[in-house]
Image (cartoon, rainbow, N blue to C red; front, side, top):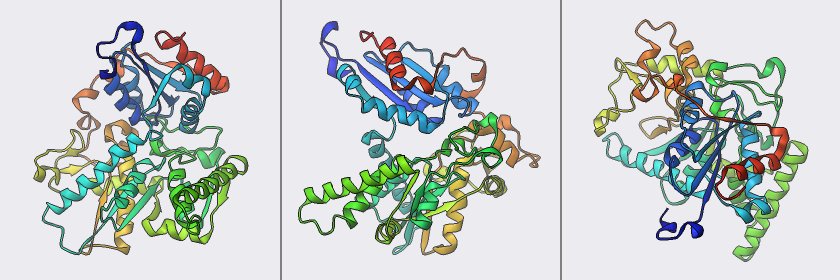
Length: 419
């Protein structure tokens, strides 16, 4: 690290990076930080609830500074651990903590660039006409990527609407339709769905298992950031100073989150819901609709739009001129198609954000395309995935019941000089 340049060993600072992942964030952080001097990275994933390839991408990295932790819970539990670490005065007094999740504003900041880049690509495509509008459709569970779109809009990017695309864990969709933000856990047969081989697995906390396990989240942690801006806009309207507006917004959000924690949910007034609908719409996509969308897009014989901009696209996402969607990206496409029935071409363009490689969710893709004679799963695999399931792995199980103190003990035992 440049901060430690020319420092003696006893003066060097050590960064402890923590993160929670439902699949992709973890491997990205691990590959970016593996082998780095003066950095330890701890990535928590819900045990048995990420796809085998996603798990292999993380756990086959054997660098000494990389620590994979499998938590016997949901992604929400992993995320709660990260928040608890940052809120722990004792841990912060002995360790320099950093986050790779969207709890870290830098993550949101980086995602803002997607929106400007894709909008610029549309402008240069020749398909955009003066006066046209653009809607962005974002598959989301944790509300991070679409929050970046909200900030891009606030920065001046002319986005007509941000369309939230959820799976059957639909707390966000229900909020935009009713003004009620409720956990609404499901259990038993109602919770069953998806493929265990792709990481879908029911849990006693009531997250519904689906074909898109990276979005199987009961509570969207970044949503509270949007709530603050809505409260600032509505409840802070009568305050005279910016400081008073901020205090009022903060108190209102704290009240809502207290109700969420103690009562399982909260409701907002019509003024807040109307403000939320100015920038956002929402769609819920079922597993059956996800499979149908993967199949329908595969059967559209198209030329690669990426190729017209000097790129051949990601290896394994195209086969015989056909595009193969992963189940999460398929949710975005299904939502975009519905949105287009309300605001369609040529006046309105839709940009749907893709989220993952289809090879990571083999069972869902194979189920969708099992009747296609020209499709073989082997055609999906990028070179980096071949043989990864046979490589040596390292991972530590973490029991949720041991709480934050158990996790702190583990981290202190692994970070050099902190035991």
